[in-house]
Amino acid sequence: MNASTYSFKRDAQVIGLVGVAHGVSHFFHLILAPLFPWLKDAFHLSHTELGLLMTVFFVVSGIGQALAGFVVDRIGARAVLLSGIAILGLSAFALSLAQNYAMLLAGSALAGLGNSVFHPADFTLLNKRVSASRLGHAFSVHGIAGNLGWAAAPIFLASIAGLAGWRTALMAAAFIPFAWLLVLLAYRDVLRIDEVIVPAASKHESGGAIGFMRLPAVWMCFAFFFITAMALGGIQSFSVASLQEIYGMPLAWANAGYSGYMLASAAGMVWGGFLASRTVRHERTIALAFAVAATMAVLLAAGIVPTWMAAGLMGTIGFGAGVAGPSRDLLIRAAAPKNATGRVYGVVYSGLDIGLAAGPLMFGALMDGHHPAWVFILIGALQMLAIMTAVGVGMNTAKRTTTAEAAS
Image (cartoon, rainbow, N blue to C red):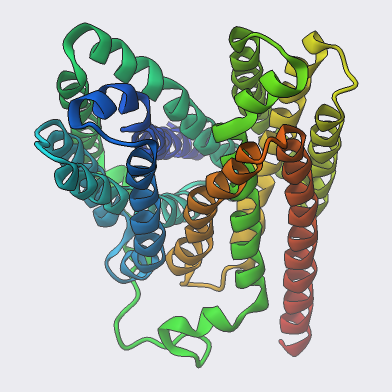
């Protein structure tokens, strides 16, 4: 086997192992939501109490994610990833045994803790183990796997719950992370990156372990994720209801529009992987993709297109968001200082969890106020605001690079 073939095989193994793990984590984002009808009846819960289960998940995940990055840089990404996926399995098992609402809250918190490790661990593994020329494709696969996890969860859980009950559905879900944990253990040498471990006494750019937090680009990346996650939270939670109210379309059509968003987003990630591999100014790709998506969102809000076209425009919004995905991850990679990859991804991606926790509350208030069009107007506005943060990150990183080159 020549060096090129070996490199391709190793890259494919790493991308596959990490990608499926990411899909499992996204599956667990929705470990409870598809089961709400059953849980509501079983425990006599209100919609607010059901919503709190999701809030607990994302709050714990957001806080844990920021901290997990430090652990990744200290003990290594592989060990952290294995721990996280094991915790997900334990959380589903614990939820299946819940006897009251408090146990559901505890199980949701445990699932959030398990979910918190994936972005800092995954992106450290991809950055350290995948050839630079294939990183755009690696991030593309990573994002697509996450979308597939989102798509699989409702089908898997609701189908089993309808046949055998919600406890059986959760018990079956517990086998998914445990099964992949066995695969990761079997291929653990492929994920070995001893060089990522940072000694406790090391200093980072004279700022210690948190020196990277002084970089403006890191907080602009955080803002980017927070903003885009709020927009995603609006699409996931209320795009179907909003389409029904604006266009009077049947539920099946509105759901088809959301499914089109998810499928087009996955397709956009594939194309986005090729685009990201061919440029170093990733903020330009992000700006163009989100500009198109925001325009389509505002057009949807206007209610001036035919009903059949409205569902199609949802796909265009998803495609734009998908195209931006790989460039977004490479933009963060460029902004991350050497030996702080885990910490940067941990802090930055905590914005994703915070945005997913806050977004539905904001969009829900618009729907309660009978302003369905404003759901899409706000989605478009958030996407335009995200462009500003992405351009800011790109300019700041380019300036820092130029300064460092001049100094050397």
